[in-house]
Picture 1 (cartoon, rainbow, N blue to C red):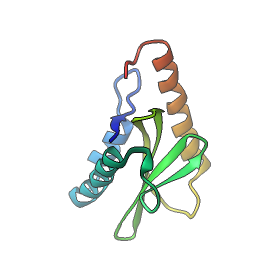
Picture 2: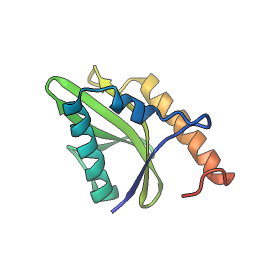
Picture 3: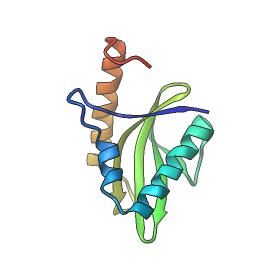
Length: 120
């Protein structure tokens, strides 16, 4: 089991939740099912549902019809996953811009944990 949190910036913006909320209900359900699977399996979740992107950065992977959705996340603690960035994957490789967004959010979150502004 793992705890799963959405990244929220200091202004209160929650980009992953906003992305999911903007999707059709059927697509929302599929992504939420996958997030539930992450909560259930934790770091043991593997392909085809999860894979490592780079370093500590991982991806949740799902498809609805022809659309491939990805949610980038990392484990802030052994049993605590932070959902950083969500998008529709349009090419075979994850774009560097999506990796950069997730990396910046991960660094921000880690900094706020170290400074005590976020308690896990």
